[in-house]
Amino acid sequence: MEKFQQKWDRTGTRSVKWDLSETIFKNKDVLPMWVADMDFPSADAVQDAIIERAKHNIYGYNVMDQPLKKAIHSWLNKRHNWEINTNWLLFSPGVVTSLHMVVQALTNEKDHILIQTPVYPPFYDAIKKHGRNLVKNSLQLKDGKYEIDFDDFEQKIKDHQVSLFILCSPHNPLGRVWTKQELSKMGEICLKHNVTIVSDEIHGDLTYHEYTHIPLGSLSEELSQNVVTCMAPSKTFNLAGLQGSYLVVPNKDNRDKIEQQFKSQGLGMLNTFAIVAMEAAYLHGEEWLDQLLKVLQENKQYVQKTFHENTNLIKVLDAEGTYLLWLDCRNMGLSSSELKQFFQSKAKVGLNDGISFGHEGDGFMRMNIACPKEIVIEGVQRILTALDER
Ligand SMILES: Cc1ncc(COP(=O)(O)O)c(C=O)c1O
Image 1 (cartoon, rainbow, N blue to C red):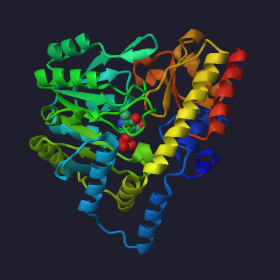
Image 2 (image 1 turned 120 degrees about the horizontal axis):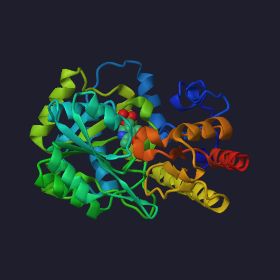
Image 3 (image 1 turned 45 degrees about the vertical axis):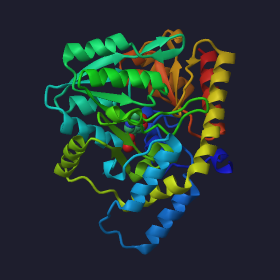
């Protein structure tokens, strides 16, 4: 547990979160609690595997071999009760890359693609940058929890003849872990209207104890043929800089098209350290992950409780998964630019603006709590002090 409590200095490590904060927030004293990586060292087994491989000192081309695929297979089996066939796997430097590739492989220009907003900003780019049309199913905040408006979901699909739906599961930034009922209903509607689903499950390993992530593709054989699942150990084990992820694509036709798309862009091989890190994390990282989840649970409870007891200006939505908290700041009565100014200049805490996830995020901010408790406390106290001084 000690490694999760110690403050590690990340400055000067080319960290986006720490080394770009001053530029992004125009304030050198900002405490960075924004971009989605963690201020924790990865599992020892990951570091050991990287060092061992680095010692070899020959870094030629790599094969994503059967031991790597078996490590993924066993991880999905033990953590998510999903029995995959290793032939279904494709590899990609990152999930965002995969989204761009899948959009190009499975849709045509001017096709309509559905997303549920507010959502992780690269979802918008993966659609718009390739001349596809964006269709939005806004998630509805009811009694402190976001829900899907299924009537709107189906109507939008019909009205726009949607061909692809990009699901965020668990959802960033809202922290929802979709239930079996919700997933089944989305899946059924998509099957009924011939809509292929890309399920971004990068946060799937990060759920709080009363919630379970269910891979959409694991729900039924019929659905698995209609779902492209994007996964990675990068959020789970803090490996984003190593750039290693994979896709699970049971449908052979889709898999061939996606593989061709990767090849057409000269992509397809993972780097040396991504491979060994992924394998080590999945084979030996379970205990580390269970400790991490406890730390995140504690951090989440602290933030929720402290805001709840001290202010009614900021309400913290209950995240069911992810280490990202969605703060409802609408009671502060500020415009989006005033809200941004308040956090970066007055509170000196670097958060993501809610509006960057879509207009529905106006009045909200996203806080990353994957850091030692001391940093979480400091961030929350800075915000409460700035609220007092308003
Ligand atoms: C939903 C979601 N997808 C993808 C990513 C990024 O994935 P990658 O770094 O593998 O491109 C993130 C990072 O925050 C994310 O939240």
